[in-house]
Image 1 (cartoon, rainbow, N blue to C red):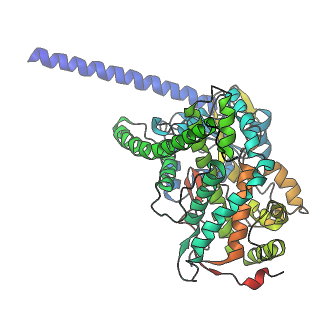
Image 2: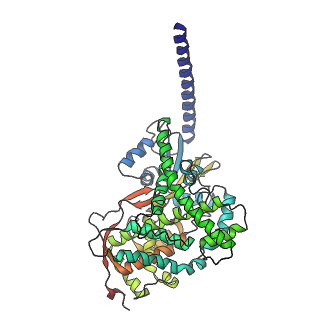
Image 3: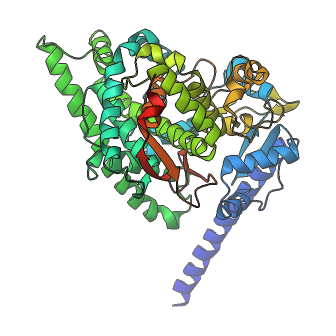
Length: 511
């Protein structure tokens, strides 16, 4: 027994020595890393090991999101702010010139730690290596050049019937609810109609989501986005690995619904093309005909792009419409001007034609202002590949750099009264328009990797908002006067946009 006890004691001592050695080594490493970044301003670390995570958690409990915290920290520490997540440093830049330097002159690559989780949350393939998440710049450049024609204005202008068709379905549903009493969550309705638009315009499929509350596709899409968000907060400690495993299994179920449906749609279209059948001239048709001549564009890649279009396109436009409608209803003078403009441009005609889009000038300004104050994608994460100078500070290679549209869009150095909702700042005659729009307004990013679908999104937003406000008067429920933000990968209105509706008087639109 004495021998066994002695052996056990020596094993305990050995393990303790090893653990002590590892802890000491890790502590020395942290001291080294911390000293590398000590010259960069930022909030004091709450913990030697946890960094600023306790601060972030405290602010989240108060309802403050990370980018809102970053906006506050920039006012205290200046345009370059350092923060720590455990032993990982990351910086935020808020200065316009620094943002443009990161995205244009330096063209810093996307941060793989972030975009890998977008493509493969919990290790399960979702968007995979689609256009948004592909890391290899050469592969991205090739794919972007192949896809550009399908998103060009000349192509999209021929799809106005599809945009209007989705509007018809939404307005027909809302007409049944327009009794001035029934509560309608317009954020939910926008979510469904934008999904319908992408299905019809891009892939010629009808998900039947506008009326079918039990359609699995919206749930799968929402849970997919939720899974991506959760993957960013996946615990590091061993005791929480089981929780992460169950999260991954639940996520994979919903991700597979999206990918399996995409595979079915793609293969059916490929068969039709192979048989020489007439197929719709939509975005999918363009992609597949390009893929025929390029064997590197595999089925898995095509499914990646299918999922990417829905994740990147549906959620962002839905949230833009939700935030903008909320602002319109809080500002009756803005609503009156939009309604008057719609009457002048469309009269009693309901179908929105391509030439009408440019004439809906004030509506366009209002949608831009909604994007400025409430960008659905709040920023981007890039990474330095070598020692770089930003704002007078030497930034080591491999440092994640966050550029926040949310902060830049509210910068008092660029925008007059930046927290006010003022569509006139985007008027062609506005001084803030000539300054701000060109320099500090980029809700779709800026530089080589700007969003390929921005023209598509703005066509869609103008058609949907014009037809909605032409048909209905909407009233926010009491308690909806203040906009609260919620982050689930994208920025969305917390609690939705709860309204009652009634039909708008026909006299508004008589010529």
